[in-house]
Image (cartoon, rainbow, N blue to C red; front, top):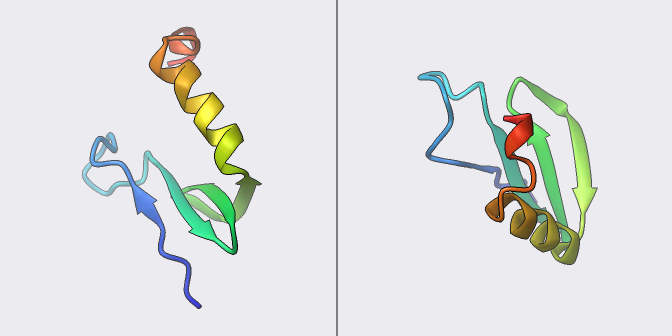
Length: 64
């Protein structure tokens, strides 16, 4: 089964190389950088949900 990677419509350049991509595979959430596709971080839905909640709440704004 091929992994179906998804990226945000808000990727920052025309080539789409300044973005993170997400996929679901075998019950895990996978995350990678588009310009380093061989490096994959695996996590759970619960951990991703917690991170996204913090990001939406501005907890990481100082890093952007």
